[in-house]
Length: 539
Image (cartoon, rainbow, N blue to C red; front, top):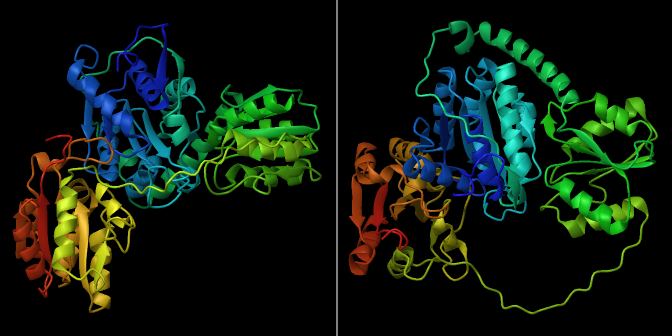
């Protein structure tokens, strides 16, 4: 944290996520909300530390861990409507959760400049749901989107994001990937700016109320903004041509961390090809791309996951350079993150260069599965389940959190896994569609995030799963952030939802836990066991 709060003109070593924070502090951010999710977790963690331990720097800054990403964005929308500089941070799946709030926000526009930081996770290093690419949301929502490559760009692009948002009265997305968020590099610091104390909401139904027919006028205004931002992007230095001559036969277009792999590969191959680095993914500039590809015979598009840039450039090429050969996902993978080696091999094919085969030292490493920490109370809960039921005759539901590890062979108590809070919703569907016994697990933070509506639906529609809430009193998997369980008792919410069969048990009481599971799984109505024992790291 010391480096984040360094003096102006200092050069310090920062993570990409930490550079995001520094950039926000340099523009005088007033309001920050987030729900923890890796690879974006450090953004909330460090802001939380700064607000708590450095009041002289952030005396007027408001920060919160929200109950989920939709609520985090809605809180941010409220702050923006009051004229405050606002930052909302989340991982890629959080962007799905907040879409209902996001699209109307882009229509109304921001009063206070607002940046939404979204961290994608190619190769699913810390994601169990899907290898989601958040870039298509830019098209869906007409949301201006910036893509930094380095920690320095993370800081600089935050400045630019707030500038664009303030100039055009529109929220801006800053899209990171794991290798950008968790990359560490030297960053030059600028001056910290003091934030406001309070804003003010000024009534304006024409701006803030998305009711027909006004909402259609809002869309027209939004599309006009997007074209103005496209013109702005054409002149912005974040979209730059570097290295070789523009008159070369070969050229490369890239964005995000892929740009760094391209630079490494060019040096390795001894090539001096022109590279167009795209810093603003949406709205995509056209004039500079057309000028870049017009003299080329071949162009290589280097981007992670789905070929969104490649599709756009193919359309442009048909009009200005029909003979241009566009290379991309025909020589690069469409799944998994890119790497220097992958890009090097693709660029060797693209440029007809030979490379020496890499020497691989094959080392046989015993296969190890991840598992809960030694002494974790989850072991006790899982053990009680195995003692209480025939695991071959019961369906087991999983959810997002440390207890996902029940899906590994060493525990083997997970038959489905989808998204936050879905364990209960899917359990209800299975119980209504079959006569099988079912036990589903959900964590305390996940319960507050997205489990409550599913529980209400389960009770309302007379379903009968056994739900075990794994209450370790923290948001453990993403770094032990607090959750509402510190103030609101889960059992009070469960009772209020109409659940009659409810018991709170410390899983160390194995006999009581086993007997309760045996009893509750026979019930013809929903039952809830709250397995409460603190995570070892907060005990």
